[in-house]
Image (tube, rainbow, N blue to C red; front, side, top):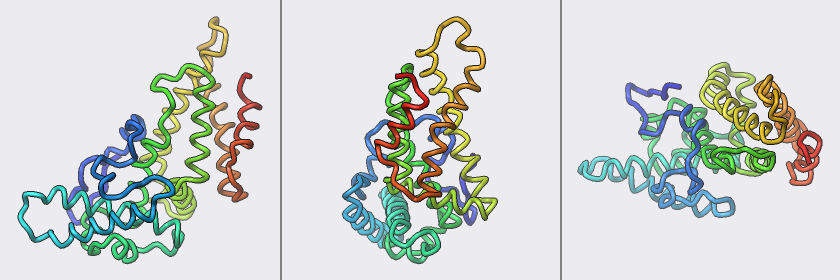
Length: 261
């Protein structure tokens, strides 16, 4: 999906959302190496990470008029500060309470810096979701071929949706997408559709290892899609509708109903 263009300017690199979703990055962090220096994204260290990102953002803003030798590093620091601040604030104040002004203040950057790359808070949250999911929703094996790989992925998905800050971003965007067609198009066309297609393919590979070889491929795509939906739908329902935790015992019970022992 094409990257968002604001005021005639293209966002920084790494904006091919479909490619990110289809080919998750190595599990070394949901941001680049620079983001680790700007702020630790690990759960439990978010306050420290946000503070570091905000400081990096303030330094980047102060250097906007300086020489261009390190302008790329300053821009990246400011961008990461905004991304960190946005999902931190989402957890604190919710989607309705999240504003560009609040993000700018928390990141230590000017509003003009934000509008240089993003059109709205939805676009910021979407970029956060895509980048974080690249690691958080990576499969346990690059070429899964066993039901155990599928079980591990569903547990990982449950942790992401129910507990991770990026899962809160997904929940917020899913809710807003019910009322806003642009958000729905961005979320589905730029992330969910690609993610689902990848997961169906991997689920099919896992099923192939657990079924008879004769005629195993016939209808495998449909079978894999039905199974994947049967596993993910209760997670979405429990998290979004019932507002209950996606604890491992619940996930294990769900998996035991649908997968071979």
